[in-house]
Amino acid sequence: MINKQTKSDVILIGAGIMSATLGSLLKELAPDWSITVYEKLGSAGEESSNEWNNAGTGHASLCELNYTSEKPDGSIDISKAIKVNEEYQVSKQFWAYLVNSGVINNPQDFIKPLPHMSLIQGEQNVAFLKKRFEALTANPLFKGMEFSDDPGQLAEWIPLIMKDRADGAPLAATRIESGTDVNFGSLTRMLFQSLKERNVDIQYKSSVDHMKRNTDGSWDLKIRHTESGEVHRHSAKFVFVGGGGGSLHLLQKSGIPEGKGIGGFPVSGIFMVCRKPEIVELHQAKVYGKAPVGAPPMSVPHLDTRYIDNKKLLFFGPFAGFSPKFLKSGSMLDLITSVKPDNLVTMLAAGAKNMSLTKYLIQQVLQSKEQRMEALREFVPNAKSEDWELVVAGQRVQVIKNTPNAKGVLQFGTEVINAADGSIAALLGASPGASTAVSVMLEVIEKCFPQQLKAWEPKIKEMVPSYGIALANKPELIEGIHASTAQALKLDNELVLVK
Image 1 (cartoon, rainbow, N blue to C red):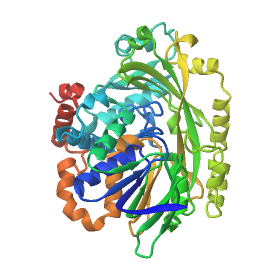
Image 2 (cartoon, helix red, strand yellow):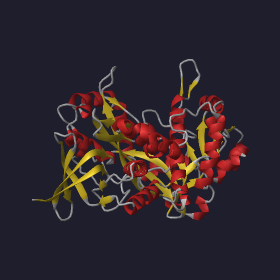
Image 3 (cartoon, rainbow, N blue to C red):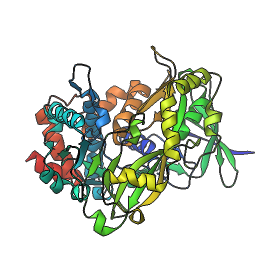
């Protein structure tokens, strides 16, 4: 039985970092608009945005080797690294604006300075890292990065990793102090608290069962309270689907042609966590290695310092896992029910092309804790099993789609799908998602609110001074952004670099 019917200007589905970011942007740009948020779980940021469900890396291409590739001529392609870094600068500018305007009180509750490092082993890999370092440091975005293959220097940078390491294959690392550790769960909760204080209606334990487009272009949603079973209808001029892994099913429910032919493949992650202070204190960095052959980019091994609940921890992983669920709190039927007549061929083509990935995932799932410890010991030679525990991270759903050149291509990254009239948009995909949330949500605004964009542009530039500007070749602008965001976000490491 449908008990009531309500209307809003905007509906946001999912209370994660993406909806939090879009809601916060729209509240600045159109403060009079009414916004309603529907979240299936009991509080904000419980799925992919939660601090226990992601790596907490402020992805700026400072340590992630998979954002740079070697071309056939031996040169290094840094175009993706530049793109991701610039997008992260956009996020930091918006966060700094929120601090300066009083929306966020204490930035240290969600972001902390932390060196980012890449670590590589073997002669060929060391040569690649040196070339990568030279290519990146020629660009002002990566100013301050250092390279070393000296064991003494490495022992200073990463004492836990170098301790008791037998002399063997050559090692090298790059290090940059301007990296960050980000608690996206904490940030998400802060943003939703602020939205609630600004009269945004946030409805938890509320599931979107159905949606349809009305003749006037608005959307009518059928909402069910997951505990009481009460059902009501809610209509809005604009709907954003930011439900993480659950977004694909909701996009399919919308029936928009732009969502046809798209599939999803779930990959889960497992981290090993150390809480022992005497071990944790020996490591102060996020150190990324190289992904095994056949592994998805999200499975790049890394040893990270993390700050959760004001405690310093060490995370190692992620080890890939498989579950047919699209969310940790999802259903075992998620994958099978996502297969529709319009994406069946796409999914089959992807399956045929990614046999090596399937084999890799099976091997990962079947690993014992001791086998995972062996992988950890490549980073921490003297790691003891009793000092580390396994933690299951969030589910990621990689987008599968057809491209002009091929069917069933497995995409890595995030992707915005929107209706031609801009009345609905959905965000699909995974890393570096949360780090680039502000850029991605500005893209949603550009695609879905073209009529308002000209009037909104001055305010957008106030919030994000580099909006619409490519930073890569503007060293003075980069330094200014580093200085202003470091001051607002209390990132002393960047202030040191700028001086």
